[in-house]
Length: 286
Image (cartoon, rainbow, N blue to C red; front, side, top):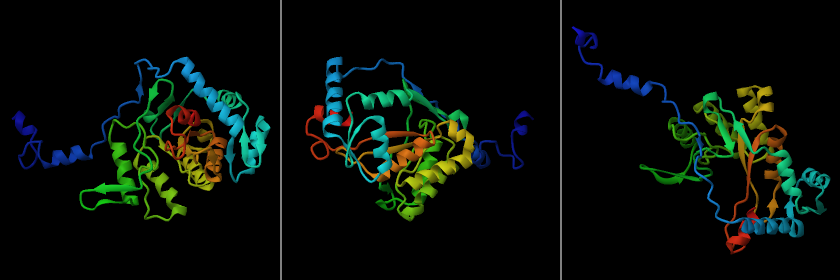
């Protein structure tokens, strides 16, 4: 009798096709929280080596400088901060850049997700795992290596959401080239918002597209919440060596003015976009 209670109308046990379909349609298992490292930091360089790299980096900023192209407002901001302006080249006195960062950037911050249980902590001893970024190609079993489409992008976002071991939805997991560039960012940001409740990254391919990302986030989170909390982290890249273009500067300013976070990073190939030696490249990247 007891066994019959667990059988369906057909008399089959609960482990059949219906049960498997129910299991597939069940909510995704709870994700694993971001990692808080408990192992010590392994110092590759001693204090003398770190000081040497830092001093060389500040010498580069002061004597060679960095070009900020096509953005008069950025040049004026540097001038107000105390830098020396020569055309579009900005020479930054030793200590100024470090002080500006220390005075304005927090050591840690929380990036909020649509689902508060998915919030992540950036900085300190925290480690947040995200999908890869910026791939122009995808590969599958049927078609091999090819340019990515929006469908590919959506599938990767869904996969990143489904796995409990990625804490973040990422950004440009692949580039959906089947969409026009001028509107591509709308579909990409919307995909992150619709198919994942994890944190995500914003568009940086133009200042107005960064603003579109912020505006979409305000619809999702509420304007006041966005103004007072980090809900977007975006990747801002320099044109190495030592050049910032108007596109990246403009996107950076949009996110900064809206209190959103940016990963500010150069991209260097040693010997082509930076010196050949590791020490000199480290000073340029510092």
